[in-house]
Image 1 (tube, one colour):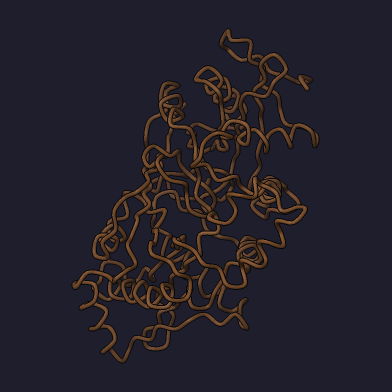
Image 2 (cartoon, one colour):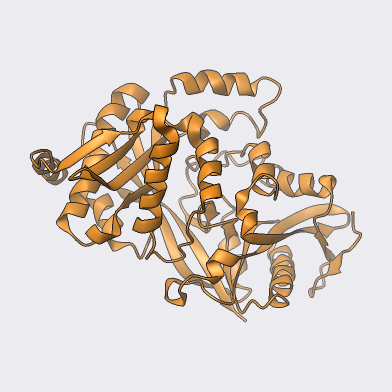
Length: 393
């Protein structure tokens, strides 16, 4: 397993091994299961989904990106992992939004020590530099639309579905290798019962009196059409955000297929103004509440348990992974009104149908002032912060 190893610059007998072949790929996916086996707040991901995420055959991200997976070995044992990757779409983005020419990424960091972390970062940087990278950002695992940032606050509770988790020490280990914070993302915990504050209710009531506004559920029978509307709004609404990289058509189809089992009409709404889609909100039941007992496996019988749960899931938490308002409305009162109406309409259905008591917005960029204001109006409190790091070479 040490064939092709690259000796690190430190003196701790660490070897960095490129991931080649099924055995090393399994070791890459399996490592966090050992590192977090005694952490009650870690939720094991489904191993099959992680393998699919890393597969050029299954993940359309590889149509515009390329990656190099690495393992850290000490005395024949796997003690760390990292990915180094380049995204052609990120290279084409405006530099003022954080990416642009010369940008590379690392992600999937796991390590048993600062020394291992530094050896992994050194190897990832070496791979990126020879490919013309002058600015490295991480973690992106793999993309802007997957897990980003290292958890730096909020270690006292498990993450919701599609959110990451890592050891408390990782941020300091990364910072000690010359990386600086470039952006934070927050998740906000929001009580769903008995209801939102009076200010929110007044804004929603005013919107309900506006005949130009229509808030509707998505139609699962027209799933492809509804998905196209939502993704069009995403790419428009998020286009000025830090780190933004557009969704491609292939990625849209892939994400829609993957998320369809978690799609419930009452949890996804589209706001129309004068008959034109102007905003949307997607809410997911927190599948982590069910998945945490599966230990990453669907076989032999966990897939049956999951299918039965998906028929009528009951959860304590719901997560808002995606929300957006058309860019032409940004900065207007109407934008805030549409967002609050979407939140309240979904809350009304979600509490009795899914039994949820808590919602979570996330992630929200620290620089996204409008969304921070929305979270405040509905009584949201930051419960987790993820930090994104940058290093210029």
